[in-house]
Length: 152
Image 1 (cartoon, rainbow, N blue to C red):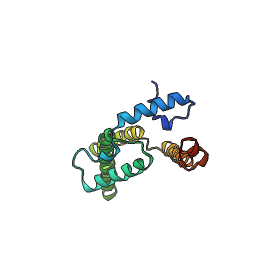
Image 2 (image 1 turned 90 degrees about the horizontal axis):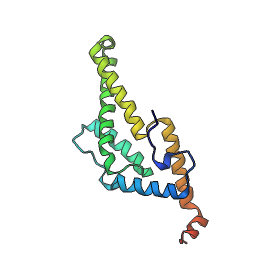
Image 3 (image 1 turned 90 degrees about the vertical axis):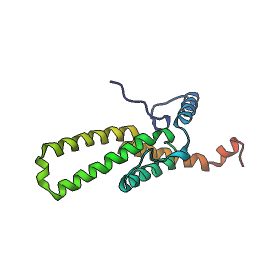
Image 4 (image 1 turned 45 degrees about the vertical axis):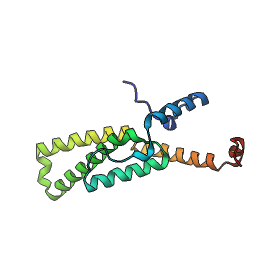
């Protein structure tokens, strides 16, 4: 099965400048408005904190948009529920042999890994985001590049 497509900013393969521009244009038009990144439904306080934490990190890099709120909200719910399950198990280690609890935990863990893949929350993705952010800063601060773009 082929790997899912990544945002052009996260790709490591070599693309032509025209391909990169075209992909960026399409991706930006599809992601919607960055100002509208709010939960699509009511979240608990802890879920809202998780949602805001992930949103703030991604908002700094500019990789998420309005259409990502559903995936982001679901991720916040899954992380919160996994944390609740782990606290229950820590308080009562006998739950480790409870098939229902462990089955629920397994389901949420699978959802978590799937959502991490969707949102790029793995260490490898964060490393790519870090290098992308660094590259963006270098381009913004490059005097020659700014002059060539028509700036001063």
